[in-house]
Image (cartoon, rainbow, N blue to C red; front, side, top):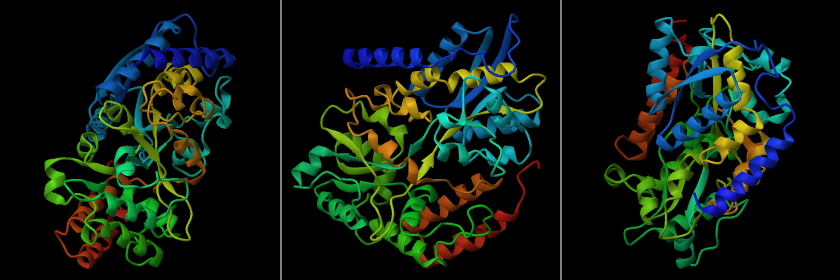
Length: 433
């Protein structure tokens, strides 16, 4: 971290904490003062992310009688495996951090203690402090808040400013269209450089379908099937997405993506645009050879802005003798000080709107210069369905979509298989329910 950034972060942190009346843990629900208490917090993340959570835990312990054992794993798949084993064995962590696309499996089994009553009784936190889009993603039944969302990321376009300038292209701007995106990607492709990099997955396709007035499922609340071929607006978006690879060749083909990921290619300066969430920022800040920035997703011709929510939330395991210590930690983590600590890492778009709009997140001294993009898209964020089997549905759909995207199977055959073969999964209960 540069001295400028350390100074700006410290000043902003001091101002935000001073402005947060009663933000110390213990002013909310269920604290029993005086007794030492211990909780375990399980989450996923790389070394830099875990370092941020370690700082968060240290700050919490410094002002609390609760001790925290941080139990990180490397990936979300590792986390799902650990949680499944822990719940089956009757020894789950007190608190765990889980993505909204994955928590439904556990919510359906009633092994998560809903946070709604704790939030309602809190003197520290209020629903109005947070993004309504992030909160709604964690209402498993559509009404009661199940977990507390700590971040508010979205799918965006990272772009190489130097490559754009060399090609005579204007930087992407709010309201740019699919045609603008394709024209830029085409101009940037050649001489060992590709115009864009994107993984073929449901969460990458969905925003384009939404922008075009379609959806990837028949009913967002009670889905029964994918609609990649049956909804005309969705099919148009899916074809546009697939054509980036199969027709226009502006994204790396299968063999080249396998040998060097799009992120690695972007870091090396041989990829014009890279689609990812805020998770990419800490890694991209290691770039020294060129300037880069962030832009919103392009909009469908005649369509509306859209992006997909990327949010993780703190959940409490049900069945604990006492949830007070677990809630104390969540209350601190979701307060101004806790959210500021994680925002300073660059990895997180805070779900607290006051911290998200502060210099701690916007960070004028560090790239991306246009971090306001993540906040401007908030009203247009959407989420995939909240059903128990969604995690498995998405994983299997991604495998089939990749087969089509890289030309391993015929487009029509692959999309038909995706819809037909996954239809039964929409009707299955979660494992263990």
